[in-house]
Every structure is written in C-alpha cells, then in structure tokens.
Length: 275
Image 1 (cartoon, one colour):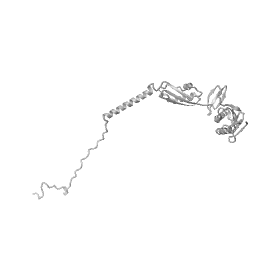
Image 2 (tube, one colour):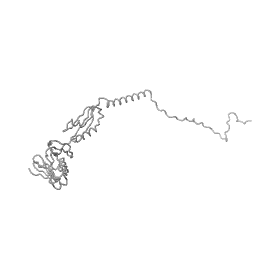
Image 3 (tube, one colour):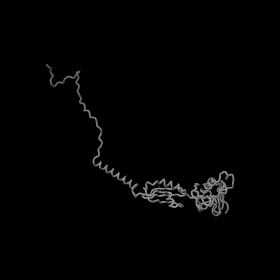
Image 4 (tube, one colour):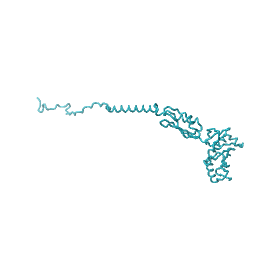
C-alpha cells in the first residue's frame, strides 16, 4: 500500500535526494549567413547604362574632334618678336608640319629647330593657339660689339656669342680693334683672350653710352680704351670690375659733361680731363 500523500500529484524524488529544477535554455540561433549586397533596381541600372553610353560618346566624339576632324587642324604659323629676321625666315626654320591635328605638333621640337637653325635667336617660345594656329615668339640677340673679318663684320652679343656675319657695320655698335704693343701681357694672354676682354667691356658699358661708343681699342689686357662720338674716350683698363666701372663712369660723366677724356681704370679714383 502507498502511504498518505502518495498519489498522482506527488513528484518523484530526484536521484541523490535533491530536487533540481530545469531552466529552459534559449534555442540556439542558426549561423548568420553573409549579408546580401543591395541590388540595383531596374531604373537605377538603366541610369548607369545611359551614363556609360553618354560618356563613351563624349570621349569618342572628343577624340575624333581633336584627331580626326578638320576643326582643330594646324593651318598657320604666326610669328612675333623678329627684328632682323623676317617672319618667312623664322617659319622656314620652324618647319611646323601643317595639315595634321594641332595637338600632334611637337612644340618642343619646333623650338629646338629654331634655336639650332638661327643663331641670331637668343630664345624662342612655341605654343598652340586653338583652333588652327601655332604661335612662335622669338627674342633676338643684340650686338654689343663688332669684329672685322675680311670685308665683313661679325656680330657678338654681351655674352660673347658670335651669332651673325653681316656685310655692313651696324650703326651704334663699337668695333673691336686690337692694337697690341707686343708686351709680355699680350704674349701671355694672346689674341683670343684680348678679344674676349674687349667684348666683356662692350657688354658692361652703361646704357647712357648706347649708340655713342664707336670702338673698343685693346693695346693690352690692362689697357682697354672705349672711343666715343665727339672725339671723347674712356680709359677702361682691364675687364675686371666692369659693373662698378660702369656706375662710376655714369656719375663721372654727369659731374664732368664737357670733359673729353675719362679714366675709370681705377674705379676708386676716377678722373676726367680736357674740355
């Protein structure tokens, strides 16, 4: 027989005599799957497709306009800056290929051809001017002195570059005259060094003497004389301290405007004489 309290509602005893209550555990989550990328809707795909088509047309049309059409062809060469050289001479030396795409003209190569073919040019600038023109801007060398060579004259700039031979002496440009006294100085420096010294002096003359110097006479390295219009002259001495001598000479000629002989060979002790 069963004792009192035993019945249908009674809990069976747990093993070991302890009553353990089971706590329900949450169900395990299934493993997360990779996030799906958003998909373009049909209208969005159409917009992207249209944009790609338009971009392709623009790029293709632009390339054709620049390279294939007649709208942007190199048709003419415009020249500016020439003083002695004519536009035709510069155009021939530039040898710009006309008729092709303007963008294909190698402006750097054109500049190199100009400077190589025309020594009179000190610099040149070449650039495209849309839609049909190549523009060439040149800077010519200007002579600071003239060297006699037979019956012709060689033009030399202030940097000592001999850039042209002409039949007639340019007006206002002094002629270098070597009248060596056969001293040890002349034998030591030689004709070439004396010519370089004379050209250096010509390039350092003050602007106030532009067009007024008729000759640079060289007797020795330390005895260079500048002959001026009106029977005046300047004892320059050597080529050393050229800029300082030019400044001193400018001040001296202002202080003694009626003198006929100026001496700046020692710029710290200049002198003027004659009237």
